[in-house]
Length: 491
Ligand SMILES: *Cc1c(COP(=O)(O)O)cnc(C)c1O
Image (cartoon, rainbow, N blue to C red; front, side, top):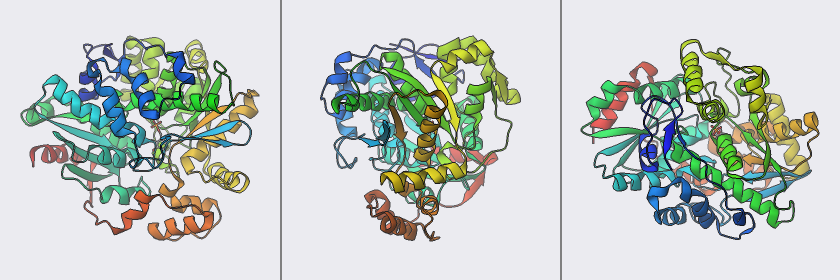
C-alpha cells in the first residue's frame, strides 16, 4: 500500500514516510491508495483490544510487519488506560450507545491515537535510516496538545512544540499543558484562535526556506490529524464498538448501525468513514457540530464558507472553521484535481461550493446537525438526571445530534455516539449545566463536580494540582516561525 496526496502533485510514499512527513510536500494530506477489506471474522472475535488493533492496522502499515502488534501492545494497556476494555461501550436509553474514548492518560479521545502514533513515528525513523531529529509541531484546540506531549515525551530522536490559543482552551486544559513533564517538550500560547494557530503551523510546513535552514539539525512533522498516523488508530475503535454490540446481543452481524461523532477537524469522523469503506456495516455518519456550524451548513447547502463569526464555546475542541480532514473526504469522493481547486479557493477567498449532485453523494454517508450552547447544557443536565451518566460538553453535542437525527429521519437503527472527553476536563461548564455553584479555581471545581455527581476525579487530573507550571506567556502569531527556529536549533 502506498500513500498519495489529496492534491495530486506529490509522489506516493510508503507508510513510514507518510507518518514522518505529516503533510505532503504539495500541501495536501496523505491518503491510502487502496482501502483494505475488513476481515468479517473480527466482528465476532474476542481478541483483546491491542490484538484487534494489530489485525486492523497491519494492512495500513506494511513496512512495520510484526512491529505493529508489539507497538499496539505497548500503547493500549493498563495503567496508561484505566480499563482493559480500552474503549468501552455504555448503553443509554433508546438504542443509543456511548463509545467511551477518554480512558487514556489525558482523559480525551486523542490518546487513542497519540499513545500509538509516536511509537510508529519513532520506528519510522529507524526503518527509513533517518538520523536527524523529528521536530513535531502541533496546533491544538485543547486536547491534541496534551495528548501529543504525553505521547512524545522523552521519545528518542524527537522533540515536540505545541501551540495553543491563549483564550481558546479551558483552564484545566491549559494547566495540563503548562505542567507537562519531559526533556524534549515545549508549549507556547499564541494570541489568536485555533484556526490562526493551525494555519500558521501549516504555513511553516510548506515554507521551503525554513526547512532548508533547519535541514542539518532536524525535519518538521505533525501530530495533528493531518498526519495519517493519527487517523489510522482511530479506525479501530469503531470496529471494536460494533463487535461489542454484537457480543451483548444488541445487533446481529451485518445489521447496520449509525455513528454520531462530535466533530471539529473532521478527523475522528473520517476514521469512521474508512471503517465503513473497509466493510463495517455503518449506515449514516452523523456529523455533530457546536455553534461553529460550518460543516452542518456545508452538508446542507454544498457551500463551505469560513467567512463567518467565530464562536468560543463550552466545547472548545470543536471551535474550528477550517476543518482540515474534509479535504480527505473531497479527495475520496471527487479526486485530486477537484480537491486542489477547492483548497485553493478556501485559501484565497475562504469559500468553495460543490454542486447539488456532488452534495447528494456526500449525503449518502453524512448527515450534519449543530447544537447551540443552551442545547449542549440542557443535554448534559438531562442525561445526568435521567440516565445517571455524566457527559462532557463535546459528548453532549453528539448526544443531542444523535437524537435530532432520529427525530428528523425516523431512522431507528442503533446509534453509537463517540464520547470524546471526560466531563472532568471541563468541570466548570459541566457544573454550570448541572445548575451547581461554579468555583473559580479549577481544582476546587474538580472537587465540586465529584461531590455533586458522586463520581471519582480521574487520577491524571487529580494529580495536576501538585505539579509546577513550566510554560507561560503568549506570543503573536507573526512570531511563530521565529519561535519554531529557536525551538529546533537549541538543545
Ligand atoms: C479533538 C476533539 C474533538 C473533535 O475531533 P476531530 O477529529 O477534530 O473532529 C471532539 N471532542 C473532543 C473532546 C476533542 O478533543
